[in-house]
Amino acid sequence: MSDWDFLYDMNDRGCSAAEIADAAACGYAPWEYIDDCDDDECEEQVQSTIEPKKKINKQKQKNIYSQAFNTFEYSIKDATELLDHFDSINTNPPPSNAEVLKRASLIMALAALETYIEDRIMEAANKISANNNENQKLQSFFTQSLQHDLRTFHTPSTDRIKSIFEKYFDIDVTAGWVWNHVDQNKAKSELNKIAKKRGDVAHRSLRPQPGQPMPHAVTRDELSKHIRFICCLVLATEKFLLEKI
Image 1 (cartoon, rainbow, N blue to C red):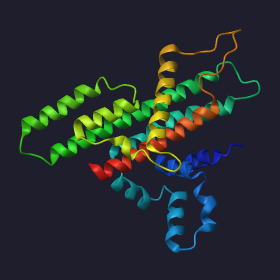
Image 2: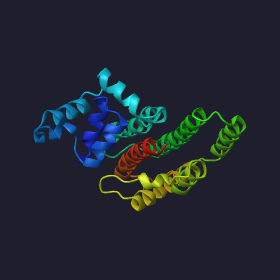
Image 3: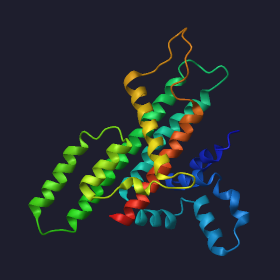
Image 4: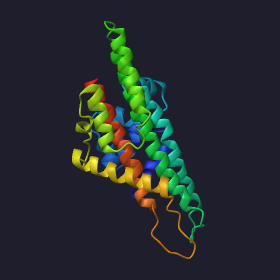
């Protein structure tokens, strides 16, 4: 049993992407540290993580996070469900067509990140425009220019994400890419590796050839780590932007 199987348990319990990302950063499930809580506040926080479907908790989350983040929580499930399906058919030996599920899962995980970045930056732009009614032409130019750039945004590499936020909001969004055991430079490097792998898979297929043994383009453990990383990256980005914009 994998050390990270508790993340799938959390997903089955209905935990949000933010809660799963926090647990991944800590390295253990919320219910594993209940005994370490010494006060009522800590116990209440743990309980809210274990039972995220309560209306009060969902309402609190909607008040805190952006609509783009809520959309990401839903869209990243495509990646996790493809991985779950791979696990369900991964017998010994695995069927020859199981490998495609891992490649598809990686593509969907990056698609969820790309959608989050595009939605989040538009959400921020609309917020700024709504708070500034002095120059309608300037607002229109601002939003139309951003929409034009987003049409060619595509693969969410570090440089592309960093440059578009600097251009329109004059902030280095990568400064917020810090969480447990991950600093800014490590996060930037890891994202670029995942983005490159996604490009290779999407444009070159990397489907194993019959009779020609070759390493899998995406191993099961790598894919699980990539999905966890993307969840953590989105959560860190969301928290940073809530403070800055």
